[in-house]
Length: 226
Ligand SMILES: CC(C)(COP(=O)(O)OP(=O)(O)OC[C@H]1O[C@@H](n2cnc3c(N)ncnc32)[C@H](O)[C@@H]1OP(=O)(O)O)[C@@H](O)C(=O)NCCC(=O)NCCS
Image (cartoon, rainbow, N blue to C red; front, side):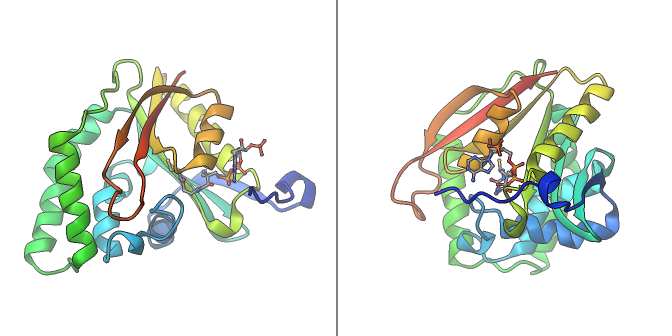
């Protein structure tokens, strides 16, 4: 059942949304890791947080810090939103800069590859080879995003504030649309996107998580024209 909290405007908690800075990297990576498995910690499916953060978040800290926002309460980062204006550029930069970094660290033995990681990598390869590919029209929805709020601070309107500020940022740069990928397991996230006007633009079932969950997961892509 959904837990309801008192909204920030009602209890005087001051939530500030501000640009992200490099010295917040470790906190952002911690929140990302703590919420990676459908809102639960990444260790459920990958042993090494550093590997997870390098694959999924290093790019944004390195190349898109000016498109990244954090939610602050007092001096603490309690949530973030990261993304990019142009997903085609992001894919190219990830392949040319982040992938070599990950390979170098892998060869240098800097990551712990345990049984969970091998299960995940195997399932990912299977998904890429066997399952239908989700095709998003990047001329309509060029930007994308990732949003996470610390478990202790959910339900206070922080996700909505982060998303609204991010949309304003994109509009200010004349970006024509934004998309994101989530799943039917992220119910709060789906409700948030729908509340903010996003529409479901693609979906399909995946066996990617079958080792961890006893049912198929629906991957959902939402898009918003700006
Ligand atoms: C999704 C997430 C970012 C929402 O952040 P949040 O600060 O808790 O959300 P808000 O308090 O701003 O809620 C805004 C709206 O989202 C929806 N929502 C938020 N929590 C919800 C919940 N537990 N159940 C159903 N809807 C929920 C509601 O529509 C809500 O509006 P309302 O309060 O008027 O009903 C946060 O739950 C989270 O980080 N989850 C784990 C990680 C994750 O799933 N990230 C997204 C991956 S795609």
